[in-house]
Image (cartoon, helix red, strand yellow):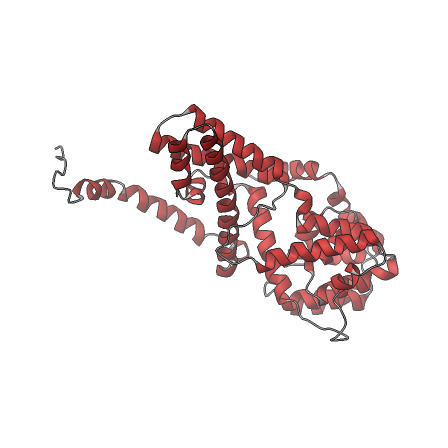
Length: 364
């Protein structure tokens, strides 16, 4: 039985098409619900984190999309293709939704970066403030006034980078301060999505394709991952290069001032870890690798306890009672044993990623 077109424009054709797709949508929803039901509790994102990751992802994608559309439209307008330029600027496709349907946003490295950033921001904002001298300047402000020009410049840059992140409104277009490899990947995914929508609406056009490519390449050329707060913090930690007796007070002060990025960078520098590895250790709710890291730095029991308590107060996923029960055992871990246990984390970043990939494959 065939269905006649709907000459009256009552939307019957659209309703019938929607009904025909209902079974597939129901099956897709059931699959998602089953996956969610069997997901371990400690792997499930809480609602706040989920919302903030969505906002961060949406802001970065929207920012890149806007730049590519504007630059491509400028290129087209300069080549007298005004109509094509205006069509690109009028595009309002949901790029995040399209990338999600394609499965591209399931990229492990991208989501790891976004989730870690959000969790880090949440923890940093919840750290207890315990100023010894309420009127004393914060650690970054003091470092920004350092007589060492390299330290002062890095501290001012970190202050500026952190301020930009904190003062950005929820619905703002965010600059892409992703690591270079992730930025590169996202640029071309978004460019392909813009082109797909343009072809669907206006048909194939070589000049539009070239303009989109030029706009994407311009965005790639303008990106400098060295401007990221994390990269600046690592430069600052390198410039400070604290002595063994200076490290513990610096770490405690960074936490007390809610400068979690600086805490992670200083800890990573002292352990010869890259920022991502140090951040993963600090944000893990169990804390097992963090205790090894703190002991590998030869930090004493009061310092380990202070750090552990601060992080436990800021992150409800942590088990404060368990930490209290284990603090004596943690403090008794020999420094060399702790350093040996953390040694694999000092391997080259790409080699560690390959090892992790092999491990995941072997568990399937």
